[in-house]
Length: 369
Image 1 (tube, rainbow, N blue to C red):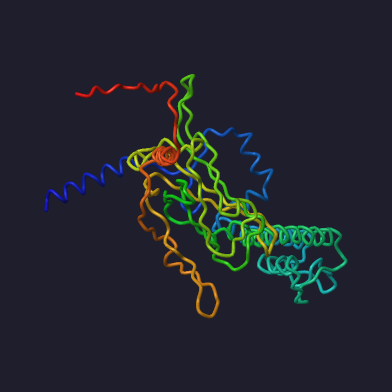
Image 2: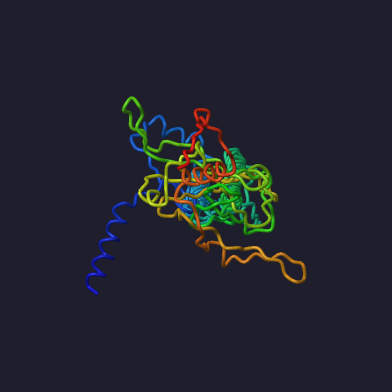
């Protein structure tokens, strides 16, 4: 019992030591940070303030949303209070009955704040209002109205844009947790399953992949995250996918594939990350979205295929069983891509006859005893 636990513990430590950080997480987020960015480059984030606000997390964006309105209301409240103070409209100056104020019924800072709020959001209770006695009050009213419209347009537009961002649509596109390698159409292929959880389609869908690994050039330069193109196809091609039901996409492992030199025993010892991308246009909004996920060697199973997921009922309806979406079934699979090619060549040679041009027939005279 103790030997089993010690062996299990040692294996877990070994796997954990080999595990490396992903560049792209399973849900598509990129695990990367930028250091030593120049101050001039940081100013670019303020110049492109719209994208900066949209990229903020919800808690920060709501903080800016609330602060923008409360800050503008309080700032203009101070200005309205200053106008009333300079015009001596406040009760502390004991205005006479013939005194005509710039803003009626402003008695202090609180009432000035309420008037600022009513002006900017155009509530208009009718109790406090600007008179024609002060030009500075009229100018302040026009200024606050214009700035209020700008703040409303920017902040409300940012909230609506963040809600309707295409990346939210990407959350209803799911990939299988693992990839499998098995024969498909007589060829050794790497297969991945992808599904659209909505009934609305993605128009013009295109799927492709990148293999990230560390390579050393002939000049001795070490390139981290070197990218190699991985072509994925379905039976109808990789362009304009009919994405109405889950699809099984596959990459053919041939001599041009980076998986050609790998085998069932060595693939788990490799150091790579396969990133898969799916681009498409949302049918409802015509916005372009991208879904991505990644697979590390521990998530690529050699000698398996995905379990069936689509069936047809007696009523003639097609049914998708998502309980089998990530399930795999073990199948007979060649040890490596080279083994499959050698096996095919051997079977092909068995069907052929070859003449030996060096062969010469020699007659042997038999001697009868």
